[in-house]
Length: 240
Image 1 (spheres, helix red, strand yellow):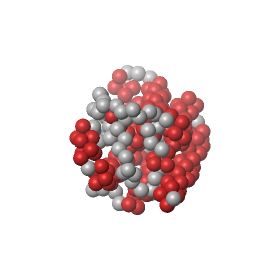
Image 2: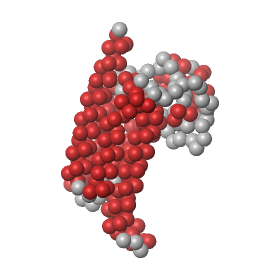
Image 3: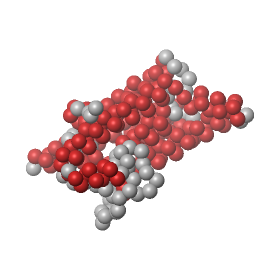
């Protein structure tokens, strides 16, 4: 089932609400997901528990860096106002860069982000965040792809058959064109996302939860401000 127009327009808000609901689940499930997994692994493998837990936090930080790189790479082939547009953009088909491996690299990165950030949540918060992120991403993808199919027709149908929807192929599935990545645009669109990675990196180094939430909070504010401003910019360009 595809997302409604309201869900697509407010997807940034919904992404934020997923984490806003998942983090407070510590009130009913007080043990941290990485702590539980780390101590289980240490008991199974006969390793030091604290070292294993810190290693999991470090791996979560690496996963968030990968997610930020994927989103920045994907956004570098789009204008930043397209990434955060309130309406689906169907005037052109992008099939370069990461789009040669997966049709929806931005949403794939969001799933990676949910897993990485889930290391900071309780076990139930982790499961909720990852499952809801995957389900919501598929709903948004269905909404976008139905519009692209209606606009691009056979061209998009060939692309859809060749390239996986959400989980990347190991090899490029379509031939590259002459399009070039505009990395400045990518970083402009995804600066807030790097803040998410920085928040977990800071925690993995310091184990200071206050630093984590300060950096995370600043990143969330930057995301909502950027998304709002870029969405308004896109709307003004459409009216022009």
